Length: 288
Image 1 (cartoon, rainbow, N blue to C red):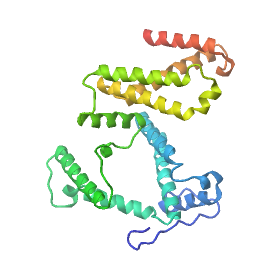
Image 2 (spheres, rainbow, N blue to C red):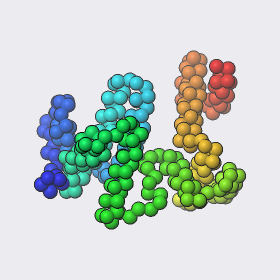
Image 3 (tube, one colour):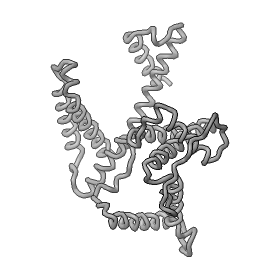
């Protein structure tokens, strides 16, 4: 709904083949058209889009790191698509529209920058951070007044599963819920791995699939325990995992390159040949 007149505005679908005008109103009309005529867009829900929003945020981060203008523009557009997609669906539900989202953001930015828009004077960025946190606390108190209860771990920010796991453990540790040293975390990891193995060992594929939710829980416990080990070592689990991802991509790229040099496609190779090239990639890493 529009904050000023308490009325939700659902964008009207654009007619015909639209031009790329660069105007927000035209983009909203284009999204409305997709929700009307595209089978995939029509079946989406706010919940079904959650993985795409997370994925696009990460891809934007990679694009910024690459410093390629075309990639950055494309990924910023993909993030914006998630915003307008959600706004379109919430408007269809009669809850709120894009103008509400924009005005809510404007109010927040003005409220959190009293040193810019009011008489407050803050001498440096550290003072700005302190004041920012004070204002966020006031906002949280206002949320509680609306019936939004607060628990100790509510301060854990949204993020990837690894990031949230490490932050949850860190906050719990501050409250005394933690092992004193790393040994307890390692023992817990061993315990969880043993439980996962129990769900997988001497089981047929059909049996594993029939019990897949239990397997999923045990796998999650293993990953959570592994994050705990990383935290106890003062390592960032997300960064460690990304390092492994980049290493895997580099080694697999080496396999593709070597196969191409021999005139072969990767689809024409087999696991024995690829494994040999994988070991060669590891040797190449050590020598370079």
